[in-house]
Length: 108
Image (cartoon, rainbow, N blue to C red; front, top):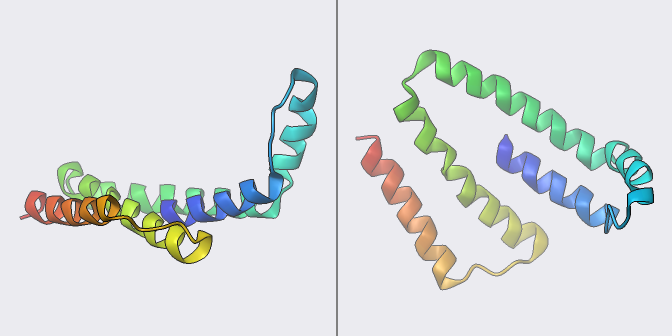
């Protein structure tokens, strides 16, 4: 939920352009931000993620479920590649391998 929320929030940020250039722009910018559909949808994903996280925390140990959060980095990388045409470099690929290995190692 968090990774999808981030992707949608990025789409909203791209639509907004720059914000908070000066003090007199703060109020109009805040209004633009909270009325941007992608921002509102992202908040809905964050809220759903919060309730899903609460459910996970009531069922499992924190030391088991928290490493799973790091898998969102992988999802964000793929979203970035396919939706925003950001490159997957060798360093990013190696990072993915280390994250997956770490999650497997911790949860054994």
